[in-house]
Amino acid sequence: MRVSVVGGSVVPAPVETVAEDVGRLLAQRGHTVVCGGLGGVMEAACRGAKDAGGTTIGVLPGEDRDEANPYVDVAVATGLGHARNALVAMNGDAVIAVDGGGGTLSEVGYANVFDRPTAGIRTQQVGSLDGFEPCDSPEAAVAFVENAV
Figure 1 (tube, one colour):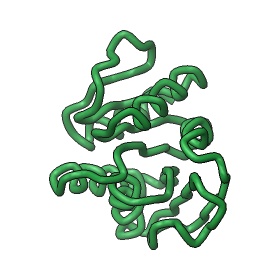
Figure 2 (tube, one colour):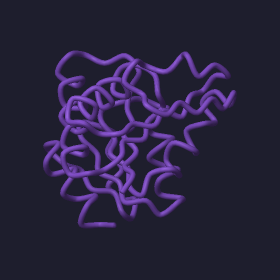
Figure 3 (tube, one colour):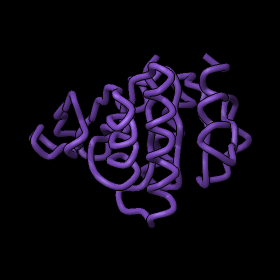
Figure 4 (spheres, helix red, strand yellow):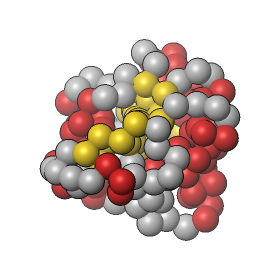
């Protein structure tokens, strides 16, 4: 399946490590990583997926596919800015949110609108949303989305 990994574009090293582990686990289990295609959580998840031989898709906010991080296999330029967040959530069968701010929160909201099961690691507290599961590790997040789809 495709799993959208969402999170901040600028994150501290421990968050980057979590995102990289998420990407690696998804790829090891045969899943494609979808993300916003830029830095931070997005780049770390793609790097982890590529390290494990996986495939990555980056849905970019701008008009230039060359803006994608170096670990994106398929770059999709949208020219939509933050409005592309809906497309990031929509193009995964499930979503894993790692850390993040307002942009990540919007992606979690879109995931709920599109009925995508969503796991959150170190992210906003939105436990009242149906289909949202707070998780304490990459392994728990990946297991949740696999079982929920």
